[in-house]
Length: 178
Image 1 (tube, one colour):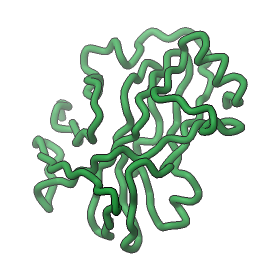
Image 2 (image 1 turned 180 degrees about the vertical axis):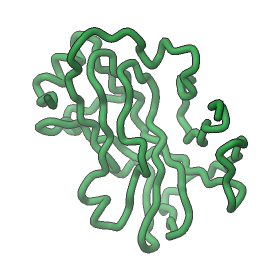
Image 3 (image 1 turned 30 degrees about the vertical axis):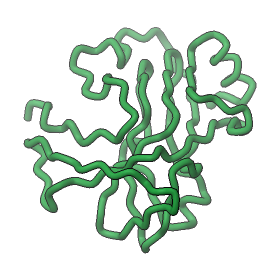
Image 4 (image 1 turned 120 degrees about the horizontal axis):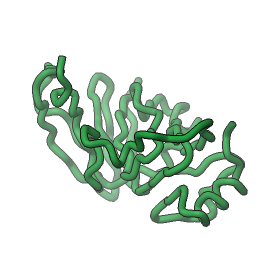
């Protein structure tokens, strides 16, 4: 079941959902709009290795925007820091972003109960497009969970994305054992 606007506000009042900064005009019927932060990053190497730490180089989006190009994976970050303590957050791209040919995530659209951070975006595009810091890029949708939670994300000792950040975070796949 998806939370409505009233349920999102009630969950925020109970401290089950945290959104910082919060802007009431970004609350939709059953979602909350999030915005592109000021930092993008790209991987330093063309060939990435899942077993190695692939380094990234950050860049700040200038006021006149930044043109993203096809064939390059850009890591972005939301302006909003969020916490979710009793629901499962899903991040979906806004239709206006999709209509520009931009994807904001490759596979990581679902968060975990207990996720407390900004969202790193895996941005790609089908043709060159100029993007801007602060532009709406996605919407968070909150799903109710059924049952008691035993293993909150922010309490897991092996959680790889628990450190609060304001910049995109590269893949931590290399920390897995395989």
